[in-house]
Image 1 (cartoon, helix red, strand yellow):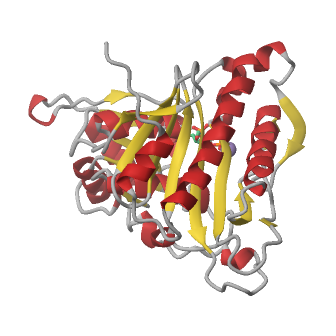
Image 2: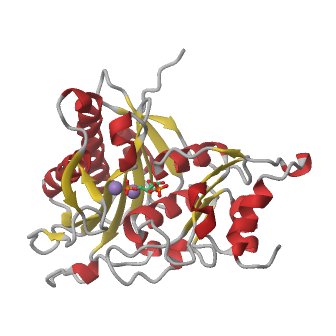
Amino acid sequence: MAQQTLTLERFISLNQPAFPGGASVLTGLLSQIGLVGKYLAHDLRRAALLDMLGTTGTTNVQGETVKKLDEIANETFVRLLQQNGQVCALASEEMEQPIILPRSGAQGAYMVLFDPLDGSSNTDVNMPLGSIFSIVMKQRPDEVLSESDLVRKGTEQVAAGYLLFGASTMLVFTTGQGVHGFTLDPESGDYLLSHKAITIPARGKVYAANEGNYHKWPGGTQKYFDYLKVKDKATGRPYSGRYSGCLVADVHRILLGGGIYLYPGELDKPEGKLRLLYEANPLAWVVERAGGRASTGTMRILDVEAKQLHQRVPLIIGSMDDVLEAETFIQGRRM
Ligand code: AHG
Ligand code: MN
Ligand code: MN
């Protein structure tokens, strides 16, 4: 069985993806994020042995209980990305305010927004976890940065992707030219190209959602879930339910095999649960560049006007035909 041998760094240098500032800057940023992945994979493997499970006893800006591994992941991202001279600002799901790094002049044009540990309800039960990152560029070279510089539309991202901590550790990213997946080789410590130019099937047979929220959903959304469960061979229904509690893991399954993930708006929480800047936007760009679609149910995620750093947004993401179909129900165009 032939072993993959193309490293992340070599892939970028050979493919010279269009990246403002050049391939070497992209390599630096993604290698640093890859290093975060190595540290976190190491920590996750031993967490149960080193009293790293459970909660910190605090709640974050989201009003959510913070797990010890959320904090460890956040600290790892901050510590390592601060060392990258090209990064001038960091924003995290786990930090109310962004960190603005002192960079002079042309140094430090990149701002990284991240969900350091996605799927936190899985930390203590050895289930899949992920990290999500979104990279945008500062617009005003020499001005002092503030939070508003990080609050940008999804179409302004220059790179985005995720780490997936599953049976293997993967780094998946896009800079707008294709979506590529790299698997960490534990022996060599390299991320090797394992999934080149990922394309998502136009339609799948899997849906991922927390159906415990069914009673909270508007009628159109409920009707879509009812529709998915009707037996109809011609349209591949009923779909199979596959929900892991980790957005990254569920979207990764759908990216490779097709289908749809939904965290819809609710009657008393129309904005839904997931965060726009460091969950929905980066995954929306990855899925779109693989040929899929990502919407709030009524509009394209990447076109949503971001207003504040921890803004929430409903997320319907996956295969083009599945998301389009879900939108017809959610928008009441189909009963
Ligand atoms: P996070 O752990 O970063 O807060 O993200 C959790 C998200 C997402 O990963 C997952 O699909 C969803 O929340 C699970 O929410 P429910 O527990 O409400 O289903
Ligand atoms: Mn998350
Ligand atoms: Mn998180």
